[in-house]
Length: 139
Image 1 (cartoon, rainbow, N blue to C red):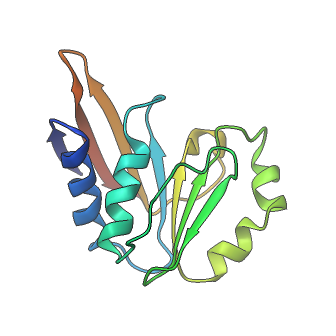
Image 2: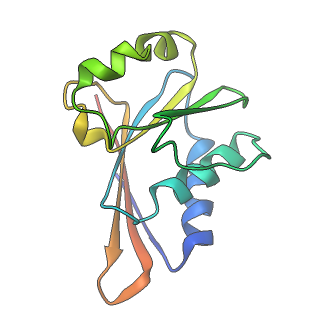
Image 3: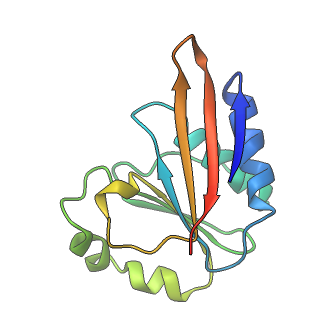
């Protein structure tokens, strides 16, 4: 387990960027944390670490955003899903078979998925801009 303390959004992105260099193709990463804690900022940095230069946004309404990085990055947001079955209905198993990295926001909505890593982000109650980020490996 690795713990980070960031003082602003840019530092959160930098942690994501550094984390990208540790991931292997096929990684499935659970993103945990409340609304507005910086999950997308973390993924934005991770995408940059994989070579993405385009704008990275939350896939809240599209469920998944795909980025042409090496390996490919698939950024999921499960906030609006009612069940893990809905995830597989949109072809989640096909994303898994493509050898990319799957970053899954609101992973709590898919408790049956097997993750290679868990990234948990919490707000520092004494500083609204600061975050505690814990990264752990699973399995």
